Amino acid sequence: MAPHISRASVVVLVAFLVLPLLFSDMARATIPESDVDLLEFPLNLEYLEAEFFLFGSLGHGLDVVAPNLTEGGPPPIGGKLAKLDNFVKDVIFQFALQEVGHLRAIKRTVKGFPRPLLDLSATSFAQVMDNAIGHPLLPSFDPYANSINFLLASYVIPYVGLTGYVGANPLLQNAASRKLVAGLLGVESGQDAVIRALLYEHRASLVHPYGLSVEVFTDRISMLRNKLGNKDLKDEGLIVPKVEGAEGNILAGDINSLAYPRTPEEILRIIYGGGDEHFPGDFYSRGASGRIATSYLNFTT
Image (cartoon, rainbow, N blue to C red; front, side, top):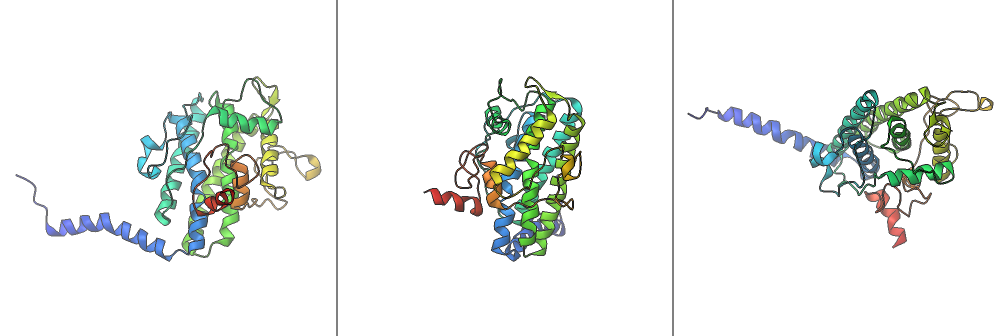
């Protein structure tokens, strides 16, 4: 005999399934359009981080872990399982789950957009490292080859996102928007701190086979991001010269140890790799998504 389900139980079940969706729609309706743009833009970096960390720790990405969050966007190019030691693998896996949560949180607040095409190939990261060091590295840099390489590749990404959240926060009009960004910023900052701390521990180690230390790599990556962003000093490597007031720099910050802000334009210049928000490249061969990013792409058509 089939179990009896009361009408009251059905009402409760329907409410449980439907009300969160209704409240989500109501919350979206109260967010100003300018806030929506600023909240959707970070999805580009959150997608990148989620896929890179998932592939690095598991060997597969959102299409396996949370396919609903992709909204049918194209699968990433070149992502693969990294050769990580057990500790780093565990850390990166936790980062991956956090990024899945970030995608979910943003999409519950604003509509968002499907996953953009992402290039996670070793070639894409090698291009960034070549530009940072100032000449082609031989053999080409492979982010998936070992733990240090993967951490250096990870150093490239979360810090850019957190500076974007710092820059967006004072522009937001809605309390719910600011609450979301504050929550995202807190965890992104934590990820960057963990990555920097792990690299700081090995700052004097040479990155095989290039004969350059971890410290040098981080310094050059930060210098590249400053150059591409084209908006003053907003990035620092692991070591700060004594003339600037310190020797170590386990966390990056300004003279008052406050996080640096970046605009969407600056972020696009960095993640496209060419210093121009109008021309896609590097991790986003077809460009980033959302109204802010596509508004710059339109200038080239």
